[in-house]
Length: 136
Image (tube, rainbow, N blue to C red; front, side, top):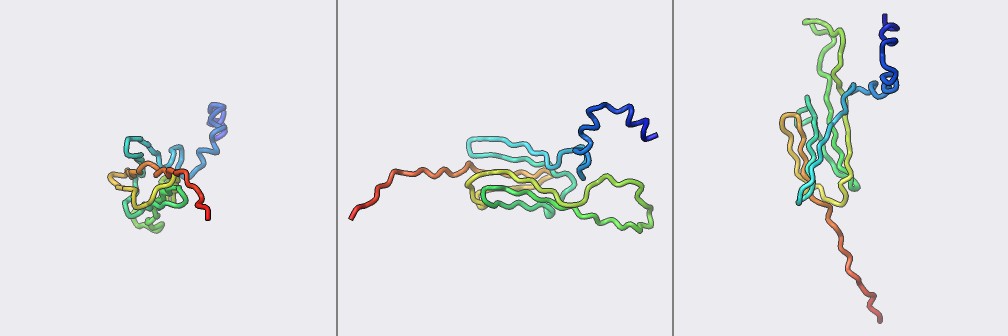
């Protein structure tokens, strides 16, 4: 029966099978909206099913790294029944964004209803003034 289903599939479906093999299924993990305003940028990152304590945000060499971990806490010997199929993902997700020359102390973040909001100020521009070597 499986071979019959494959015959009915569109040719292009098979081209994207490798993409569908990710642990997150067809969905893109950590979908993000980025908004620019006069002060800087605001990122709204979807993280459904995560709690605030599962999310970590760090800054290293101009890259903002967002990490989240969801642990599997179900017991395989559950007296209430057994799983026939499991599609929910348990593990670590990571995504990074280049934010330039900003300091972690200047970045603000909040987590509400599965959406992580990060406010990043504009990159601090270093304006070089022309300097002259003082001769002796």
